[in-house]
Length: 330
Ligand SMILES: [Zn+2]
Image (cartoon, protein in one colour):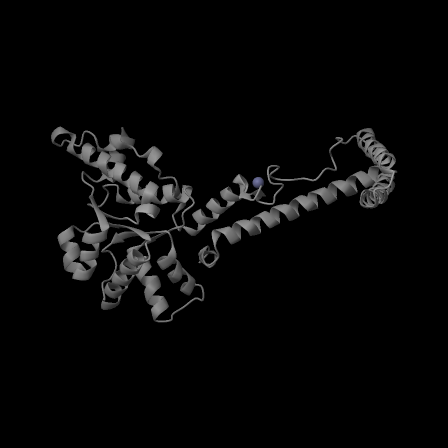
């Protein structure tokens, strides 16, 4: 159940905790370096203690506007020079005892002039990615490596498959770029192996890159989670996953129609779809069923939500897994 407990915490909280760990590690490094220098050059302790004393004097002097200011400043500069020389004499770099930061832009605070530093943004995106439940393999499925040539030469008239898949790809990309503004949803229908999971992974990864929260789940597993939660066969963190299913920016339900359909799953599906439409959260669903089969399997209120609020996309062509296998053999 690794990973699940983390879902209840926001990616931001997790990122900040990592930043705190980074700061502690760097402090540890500094302290190790300090002991290392002291061992070789015990005079360092005296210099540092004197620097501290002079620092306090300088501060008082500034506050009381006394005349010794320049003198004290000179003493401090002298001591700092001696410290550098001491380091060099003992074979260290003159900056060896400076503060250590993993990010010098924000000095590991995560903020530059009140704005999130790039390093913090990266940590947040990383944590959202870990919460997304996309497998490592799926995390690599991106629009950049969407190989449309797979859909060419499928012995169809006028390259129909290729044309359709080009449109699917364009629509998916545009959806991934704008769903948080358009509040749009995406239902992708097609036979097994025609690239549906690939397209949904691409959408998920693009959304993650944009800093949106994403949760991927197969229909089979999704209903299992909801059922266990409902009927209390619970690990404690299940409640939070269920909350995440409702709240996440982008929910991806893969392979709708492969679950055991019961009164419970029918009601749960409607509730998720409907609640997410109402709260303006987008959902992507893929299915091997055609629309008629969907209508027969799910209630009319589910299919009417699909009609009203979803872009319906149909993939075409042969099973890509066969094509890929043939390709690899050549
Ligand atoms: Zn930074």
